[in-house]
Image (cartoon, rainbow, N blue to C red; front, side):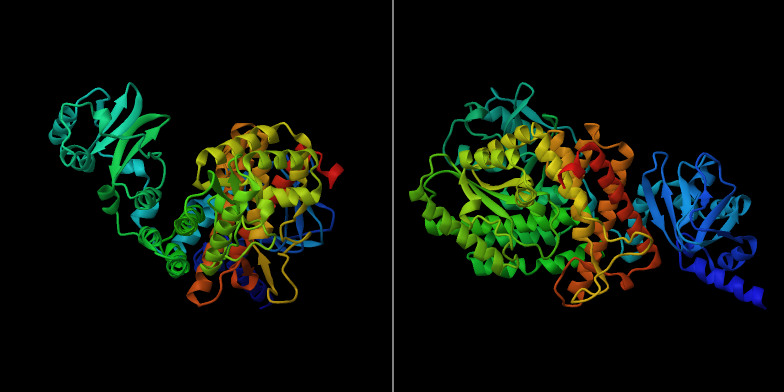
Length: 624
């Protein structure tokens, strides 16, 4: 009787912990009788490196830590932690050493039983076949499959997938008549105009009506005289959704696709709308039509339900972030346009730049404002009143639209965040030459910068100045690395997740500050050191990997950890929207399944490893 109770207890234990929780109940009930329980005293070796395991070990009680060949901490785990599975599955030597850091009981599953489980249950086999990052990737996929049906076509398709024919083009010296004849023969509504291998322009049906027929222009003239020069283009690997939003925002109907400067195809608004009538497109279109700030705020209020819809469609955190960011961009641009219409033309050229998560295309619900103004060097103190009024109107409009003011006052309405190009370049050099911890904290957001409105050449000049200056400032990079390594993920020294013990967020953890933001900070340091001008976290990890600053394995693990954490936040915020509550980044751990908790700890473990690698590359300890 006592034995039956013990076996039942082990069965219930396995049913609570992945990957055994995924097994059929009959298998869960039979497994305990085929396994044994072993005891390991504190500070003893549980599983040595260099040997091929003969059994899978599962921590039943107690705690273990896993270290690599260099002695660096890889993971600390408690009940449910599996040891030796990947090495056993692959028939390879164990790469790490597992030590008991408490007196521990472990369930030992013999190799032959483990092999049978892997053969009969693909999910369990995949769990142990993949490294940590791969398991996180599988976890995201499993969550999305379990939660809602797959995303609609507009969220999944790449623009290049819509191309059904080679691009049709005429040379720059062709006549309008010849171009029109080619369009008729090919049954198309536009034709590309090329100058050698370079895309010079595009001629559309609308151009023919408005610039030729209506204007009485001779069809024998060169197509160069009536075409639309330097048309807006897109990368064929971009999401179809992004293309739809771009067409709506710019009121155009044709989008040439370029890869490495070479035209590879053309898509039209009709091609894209055939996918589906996507809510984000209509929302952005309505923002563009808003006649005042109040109307902009009313349309922006539809963003939260949109995010809830994206989750129902199975969107990834990366794709959802781009959609939410694009809507936010549309709101901010429209407020700038409305303010300009009332204030009149600017006294000198300017660039409105967005900062932080918006600049990284990673905005979620509930973000505050982060923006700045870059003025032409001809700007004087007499011009500041116009720009101050512009900034105040846009900041107030954003606040009314659901974007709170930045608590650190990193907004164009603050004179410190409103300078000429030369002034910003001097400020960047001051930050780089005297990188105190407080200065780094203030300026780090400025190195996530993206042009939003106005004269793009000003933004481009500032980004290039930052890129070249930072790369030559190892002391600043070290301080930036110190800031990235200073914040610890919310996972305990021995086991468990660290949560708030009191207040409004009791028993919850901040998945943004304790996870997503750290990944972004690590990626920023490596990308800036590599001379990258890109802002998106996943893009920066790619550039850091290409430059050799991150190993391929760690870069992949960080990407998967970022997506896993982002998906948890996305789903959490969607749940709050559904309940009519204000979205935030605080996730209650009691709302998570055992599967999610285990992978949340794994994601935080990846982040800690990345912080350790960062600290080894830069003299972090000497300056923090």
